[in-house]
Length: 342
Image 1 (cartoon, rainbow, N blue to C red):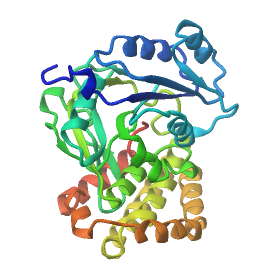
Image 2 (cartoon, rainbow, N blue to C red):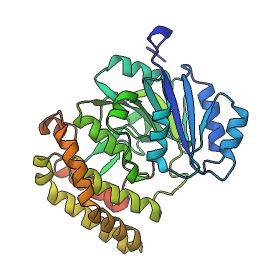
Image 3 (spheres, rainbow, N blue to C red):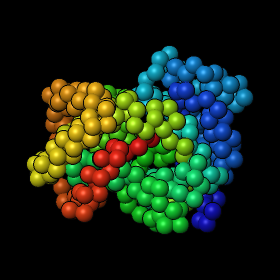
């Protein structure tokens, strides 16, 4: 890889974190990919979220250098990563990797290089290629629309047409690098989310705290996606659409929240109508009911988050997607699916 780190003294201490639940044979493929990395992580931590397929046990037997955390129950993606972040002492950075995301050899070296070149960033997004369609992108960082919707930039576009390196609103946590001190200071992922939208929420909070996020196209992982929950399963719809509301309510600065509230409400109404027409009224209605019921707690979180905010609303607006064309795109995406499973 052009420009890769070669000086060991300049290499940051990185812990690779994999949260596994029902990962099956993917875990061994991840382990082989990690073994081929040109830059070796200081630690590899695998969180066993109550897997029953024996994949984590097989991984531990075959790779004794991998550290396995066994909480004894399924913590979810959010709490599982938080547990690993707390356990990753001695490491400056956390490289999160899904068990169905297979990094190319220069994946970690490219992330480390980007982190060194852009110290203002506490979050670096990898390029995700579709594992099942090698010439198509799964994403080049994540877009956040002022209505509250988020999606993967360049999803299903040809790899050759993908965006170049630069600033993005957030990173898909299927393959991303987080500065550990910033991750912990922000409180990590919101564990009430369980899974879905927690990476957007954390990126939003990191931005409010003054940190940047950058996309690094040289850092490549091949991503299967939807390997556990399914893209439009009831589970995915419920958690994604509940957490979408929480993320907007917690993080959107007051001036922007009021200006774009009509778009947020319309997005939610159209999402409810769409999934009801598809025969999935139960998960979408339950999601919105639970989102509203939890608003007193979420607004309490909001007060603390906004009180600590270090950036102006116009700076946040600069990195959000907005405008009539972008809103039409957002509504079309909401009609098709929320964001796709991580």
